Amino acid sequence: MRDEHTVICSPAVFELITDDAPAVRVKVDLTYHSRDPFAVQASFRTGHGSAVDWVFARDLLHDGLIAPSGSGDVRVQPVPHDPNRVQLELSSPSGHAVFTTCAQTLGEFLHRTYDAVAPGHEYSWLDFDSALSELLHKDDDRARD
Image (cartoon, rainbow, N blue to C red; front, side, top):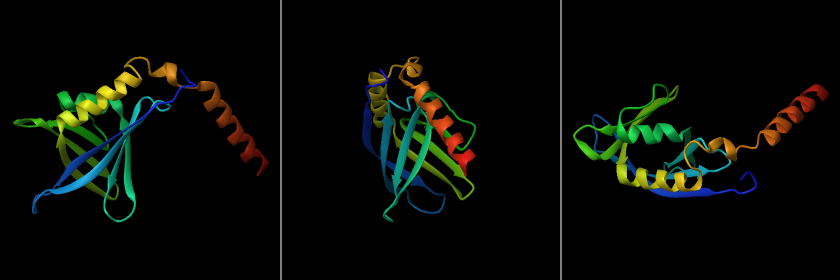
């Protein structure tokens, strides 16, 4: 399976939630690579030319569709009293943001990722030999410097 490679991209619209202003719609590209089978990338297009990328565990996104999930920089949970929406909370040293989005959109994206790499089979997609070789070559390059 290591020689095969699947990339799944799905556009989504998230709403940035603030206490003192109406929600702001943000276009987000959700991406999944079978070469990094445990992760999902969310690229937030802010309108300033470049995207803001967040990478987090695919399981976190799945679990957050059902119940509050995450204890670090990314937290996902169903929106209380609205089972059709999911809340995504992002925290970093430079700020904090809370978004909501359509639970069905996230669920469909996850379903596509599970069709590509079934849960529990992620390790069969990892190329440990290549990763180890890359690490060893980096160490060789540092030793020469």
